[in-house]
Image 1 (spheres, rainbow, N blue to C red):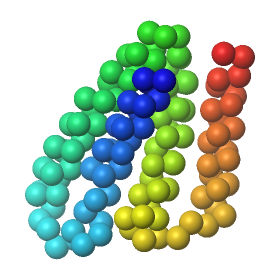
Image 2 (image 1 turned 90 degrees about the horizontal axis):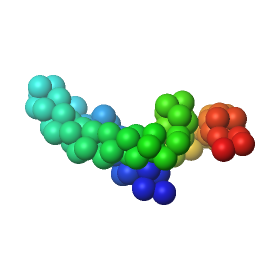
Image 3 (image 1 turned 120 degrees about the horizontal axis):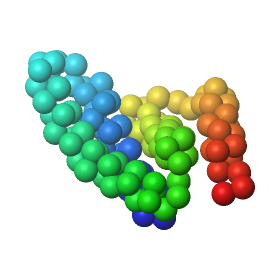
Length: 111
C-alpha cells in the first residue's frame, strides 16, 4: 500500500510539473516555467524513488512498478485534464484506461 500511495502522490506532482503552465501560463517566459516545473518535479522524484524501492523490496518486478505508475498517471491526468484544464472526457479516454488496466491485470496475474 505505501508503494501505491507514494506513486499516487508522485504522479500528482509530476502532472502539475508538466502541465500547470498550459492554462494561463503561456505568457510566462519558458525558462521560468522550466525552473518552476523542475522544482515541482523534485518533489515527485522524492516520492517516486522511495515508492519504487519499497515496491521492489516487497517483490514487485520492474514491469509491475512501471505499469502501476502508468495506470496511476493516466487516472491522475484524467482528473487534472477535466478539473484544471477544463477538457471533456471522451470514450477514447475510457478505452485507453481499460487497455491500461488490462496491462495491469496481465502483469499482476498470479501474484
